[in-house]
Length: 326
Ligand SMILES: Nc1ncnc2c1ncn2[C@@H]1O[C@H](COP(=O)(O)OP(=O)(O)OP(=O)(O)O)[C@@H](O)[C@H]1O
Image 1 (cartoon, rainbow, N blue to C red):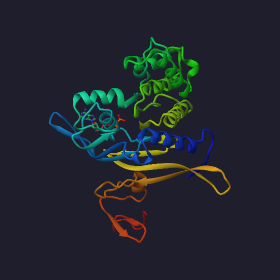
Image 2 (cartoon, rainbow, N blue to C red; image 1 turned 45 degrees about the vertical axis):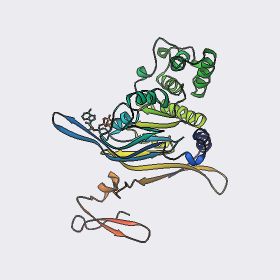
Image 3 (cartoon, rainbow, N blue to C red; image 1 turned 135 degrees about the horizontal axis):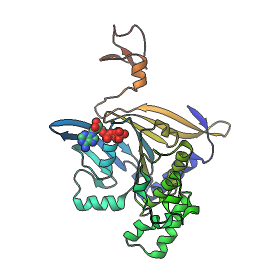
Image 4 (cartoon, rainbow, N blue to C red; image 1 turned 120 degrees about the vertical axis):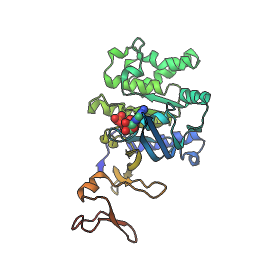
C-alpha cells in the first residue's frame, strides 16, 4: 500500500531519530536490540488454574525506534508492558531493556531502572499529571525530585512543552487542558529526566481520531529530537499509519508486523510504503493472519509445499476443494 506523504515529513523524522539514537548509543553499530524478549513466558496461577498470558514471545526493538504493539483484548499486551516496565517479573525466557536483565535484577536496580531508564504515559490522563500543578510545574516535578538545578529545570521544561506542541499552555492546570493537550504534556513529563525508553499504554484510548493524531505527532517529534526509543501499546490497528513499525501480538506471541518506510519515487516525490510480515519464532513457528485462515477456511492441518522462492500453504485435502495461500 502506498500513500503520498504530507507534512510532517516522516522520512525526515525517521532519519533524525536514527541519528539521535546513534549518538546516544555511541555509534550506529550499537543500535541493535535495545529491547529484547526471547521466548518470554508469563504464567499466572489463580486458585490452582494456570493462565499462560505470554507463551514464548520474541521481540527485538532497536534503539531510537518508534514502535506500536497491537493486539486484541487478552492477547497479552498489558502483561508484556508490565514486564518491560519492571512492574512484573516473567516466569521464563529473556527480557532485556537497555543494560537491564528484567528477570534477575535486584530490587535496588529495579528501582533505578524505573526511575531513570524508562518513562511512562498511561491511558488515564489523571495518572500522568497532578491536577493542582500547571503543565510547566508538572514537567518540572520529576526533574526537581531527581535533584536538578532550578534554572536548568525551568528552561528544559519549557523546551519540552514546546517540543510536545503545548508550550502555549505552560501556565494552565490539567483541568484547563483538552484530553489531547493533557496527553502531550504527559509525554513531556515522561521524558523530563531523559529516559532511554518511553512506554505509552493506550495513550490515545480516550481521544478522538484528530486529537490522537496530534498526540502521535508529539511522540514522533520527541522520538526524533531526543532519540528516545518509544513503545506504544494499543488495541487499535489504525495506529499502523502513525509509526514506522507495528508489531501484532496474538495469544501471547508475536504474530505479524507492518513496516512503514519512506522512499523517493522516480519523479522525486516521497511516498510511504507499508509492508506486512508474519513473524517466525526461533523454532520456525509462524501464525497466519486470522483473515487468511478465515478466507480459505483453514483448519487443523494444512499442506505445505516448498517452492524455490516461497512456501505454499493449502487447505488439507477434503477440507476445501480449492484455494491457495501463498
Ligand atoms: N494477574 C493475573 N492473573 C491471572 N490471569 C491474568 C492476570 N493478568 C492477566 N491475566 C490473563 O492473561 C491473559 C492476557 O491478559 P492481558 O491483560 O495481558 O491482555 P491485554 O492484551 O492487555 O488485554 P486488554 O487489552 O483487555 O487489557 C488474559 O487471559 C488474562 O485474563
